[in-house]
Each structure stands twice: as structure tokens, then as C-alpha cells.
Length: 374
Image (cartoon, rainbow, N blue to C red; front, side, top):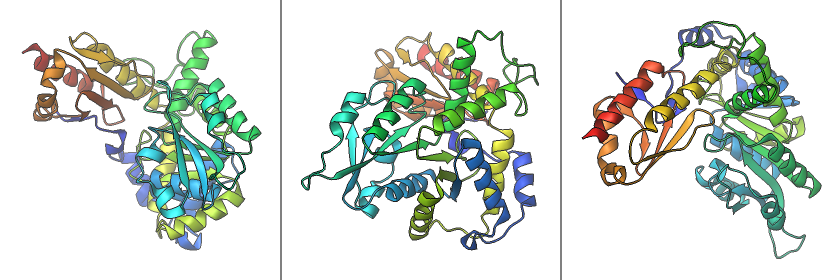
């Protein structure tokens, strides 16, 4: 058995997605006449409540286009130290746009203290870069940013004249987690009736109540921002692609930047069709990925030397303490020999996705237990 938990980017297109790709009508997106791309852009913009959207090959390029569309040379954006658009995207805003990041230390839940944001906003003085943008990420390392916090942070940014961008690479994972919280607070009796899922519980259906709740929560989160980047190739399971949503004026600027960055694709409707299929069929099932992460966390919590961080979505972090830490270098090779792929050393990361099921999680647990039993 092979279980790849390195990332949710490793998924393969489902048969239904492959069929949708092959049937997609195509044009030339550089001329803006690919009907499948245009349909996707209209769909995601409408779902999240924006005027328009722009299809891009990667989330990194989507964030880059957003930052450079909001900011000019000599401007800066406020961002968390471990945010993807600061730490993991090659410094693109600084390299290509001369836009300075102002990274701030974040809390364990991924939030930036409101006082720290306030203090980081520069006065209008020639000595300083001009603070133009607040960039947040949700989910952040698999954690859901609390909705009250998102509203407070973005309200603060607006009051100080800053634009607001969301790296929502896993926005729909955040929406699933938020919908579950809302349901729990409302004292709901349980999940809606639907098809049996792979965990033995109810699988939510895209046309059912839960799917509507998820899109509602995704829109609630998105509407706190002036722009939102959404990735289709992570939890949603498309092979490639992201969308940047915002106003038509902002996306006109972003479109020009996309061209300069080499992101103008031709018959990209093949890829857009996969993303559209994912939005239609693979959003509500993200709840299954979250349940699998909880299943893995529960199974690992009984192993001596493992400090398991309770997952809020589909990403699980496990820290190795003694006695497990002493054998850290041998753990990933042992897992790989038994068909399990993960990442990390003293801090392990496991990411569940649509190509993982309960049997796969149980196999991972068996391999981990065997390793630490020696």
C-alpha cells in the first residue's frame, strides 16, 4: 500500500474530472476567448461575491499578481513570518515588484496581534516604505483563523487605508471547518442525510445542506478582503491552477502582471474544466479529509514521545520528543520503505486528501507503531 501524506497537491484527477477535462470546449485564453476559462472565472467570482476572477497556473503567481496589483514600487505589505506569500514564494514581490514585506511574528493560531498590525503601519514620511496592504492566510498551517479575528483585522486595515488580501489556498478547508463550528454552536443534531462516506459516517453532498453552508462560509470569509487567491490543486484535487478574485479594476492590473510573469496560457480550458469540476463535486467531501486527519491524530496520540497537535482541517503536525526524537533520522526512511510518505524531521507534517482513505490511515498508524515499538 502507498499512502502519500506529503501534501494535498499530490492527488490524481478522478475519472469524472478527467472526463470533464476531455470534454471541455477550448479557445485561446490570451485572447480571452476560452469558454471553459471564462466559465470558471465567472463561477468562482460569483461563489465568493466578487466582480471578477482571473485564472492563473499557480497560487504563488496568484499571490504575486495580487500584491503587485495592490502595491507600487516602494510600498510594503504586512504579513506573518510563516505566511506562504512571504516565506515560501521566493521573495517574488520584492524581486519583481520592489515591494517590501513587513513580516510580523504570529500567534500559535496563525493570527497577528491587532496591536502589532497597528504598530507596523508606517507614518506618511519619506523615510519609510508606504504601508499599503495587509495579507492574511486562511487556513494557516491547517488552522482556521477565527472569523471574529478576520473581521477585526480587516476592519483595522480598512480604517487605516490599507488594502486586504487573503491567501486562501485552502479557503474551502477553512470554510468546512468554520461551517462545522457554526453547526456545533447552533446545537445541530448531526450531519445531513446523504450518501455513506468512506469513514462509515454520512458523506455530505454538494447539492445538500452542508454544501450550501460551506459556500456560505467561504463567501463570509472572502468578503472581508479586497482580493482572494484560491487554489484548485490542493484540497480540491485539480491537477493545477488557482484563481484570483477581486474588483474588475484590480484584476485589470493583475492581468497585466500575469502576462509579464509568463502566466498567459493558451488552451487552458483543459485545466479550468478540472477546477470547475472540483468546485461542483469536490468541496463538501473535504470534511472527509478533516475526519481522516483526526483519525490519524487520535491513533498517534498513544505513542510515547509524540506530541500531537489536534488538527483543525486536513493538516496534522506531530512533534518528536524523547525518546522518539533520538530516532528521528530513521523515521521517514522507515515510513518510505513501507509505502508511507510524509515530511519533516523533528516536526512531522501529514496532509490528508482525496486519494487517502481510512484503510490508508490505519496502515500509517500500524507502520508508526511498529517503528516505535522496537
